[in-house]
Length: 119
Image (tube, rainbow, N blue to C red; front, side, top):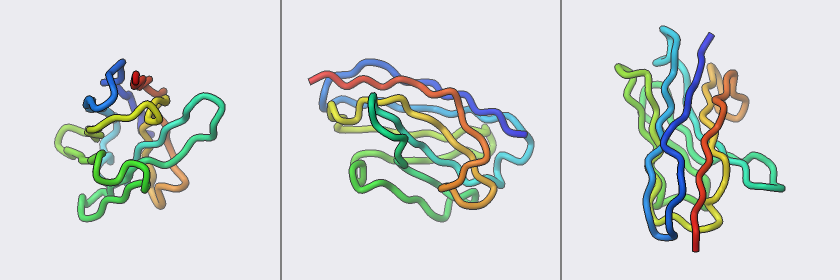
């Protein structure tokens, strides 16, 4: 069992930055691929970024590539999402996810943290 808790969301002006954190419980955190998803009002949840358990590979949605960076610290059971050059269209609830296989089918979800970017 893995429990995930996001933090770091908030209100920021366009062009600003935020760093989201996701703290995980469970002894085998280091063996899970971790990812971030987001859901804007009236839209479906969409993939944002992912990182493998070994930190050898990361992937990003085209809409955030070059602006967002995912990282993880397995010693701290934490995954991060550094978001720079934020745009109003980045406004959404951001969810952390953990997957034992493919990040497209997570096994666990966090409760979400709101990110609001004002223009």
